[in-house]
Amino acid sequence: MDFNEYQRDAAKYDCFSKPEKLDNLVEAGFLEEVLGLSGETGEVADKIKKIIRDKKGKYSEEDKVEIVKELGDVMWYLAGIARYLDVDLETVARGNLTKLEDRRKRGKIGGSGDNR
Ligand SMILES: [Mg+2]
Image (tube, rainbow, N blue to C red; front, side, top):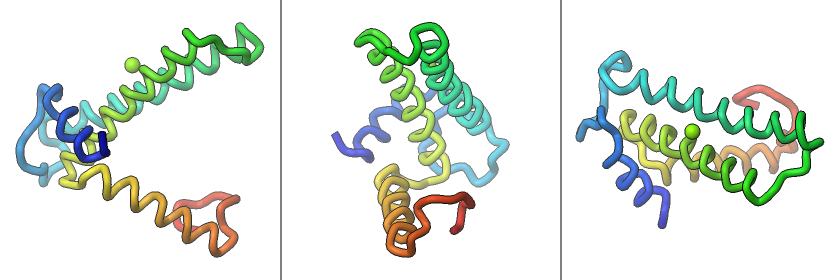
């Protein structure tokens, strides 16, 4: 499965899904996607926090399965936000790698700042 195939299939489960891009970010559906992404990334962090807190960082196969489920939820919301902005996931993924390669070539992988 490639990113765009995933994005198309994931849209089937979006109860706010619209066929066209949203021109206004307060339109129905978009806010739920943004809040959902934030919530799901929190769920990933929370599961890892509990492994660190309660298991001294040692995770089981079951822990891993549960974290992977949450990563999938993050991906679902990411795909939805990109779809509402009329951007395919392949473009998002390639753009990220291009940015990172540019930083690597300039010796700027470390540090902080969105546009370094
Ligand atoms: Mg979840």
